[in-house]
Length: 167
Image (cartoon, rainbow, N blue to C red; front, side, top):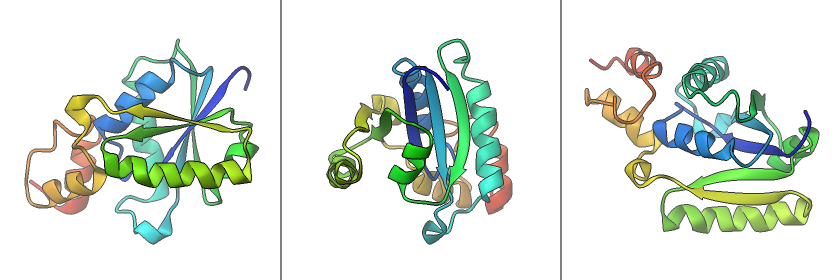
């Protein structure tokens, strides 16, 4: 990997249009974007790690961003800053939807700066049409038979509906 390297970490359970919006914009800022897929057993993800990685790869293939930056999808199960250091990251990219996101992220930036102040964090505001989208809510809508097509990439919707037994 050469040039400026960014890391967009998350659980991506599942990847949403909000996530792909952040990815689409993050590749304008870096030469290589590592999408770090957190194993995050504590959250009890609906999809396995392999399923989440595959869904992300499918979703980004449809974004048409290959000429803007190299995008790599990598799972991780360690402290974010340790993963960032192994990837030789210059910047961590985080998406924000609301003030409540900022409060949590603000604390994380402070802690990460104590661990390694050479890695910067950049916040990208989600596009207004995606600000309400949260993976947790999308899973609930799918469980209850609601239309999720406005919230997830087309390749993700059937997988989520199959997983939750939705219509």
